[in-house]
Picture 1: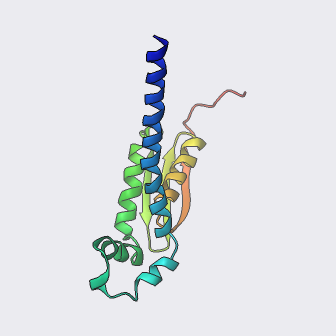
Picture 2: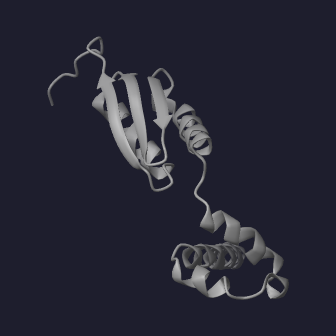
Picture 3: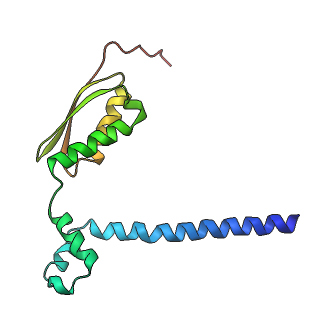
Length: 142
């Protein structure tokens, strides 16, 4: 029985190691696409010699997402957040900023909405005009 448990533990450990090894290169590939320096090195090369992946990635890096794309992404992310299900939040996106307005029931919800907007703002500044509803029940002091 001990021999069986030892083998099982070894298999689980090896499986976890393989899973981590497969996930690690994916994280490494994302980091080089963030700096602008490698993109400028790729641009002088003729299009015919570039692999298909580089051709597809370059236009994305050169053009910022449209305001409607950013607005849709933020609204979708807000709707997926369970704590904001009953919130009334409007999102307005311009080329330079994202503005949040509406009402929520707690300051935690307001902070969560702002964090979601910042993570989906595509480099735009986030202005949080969300108000905490006065109808929210007061929390007892701790």
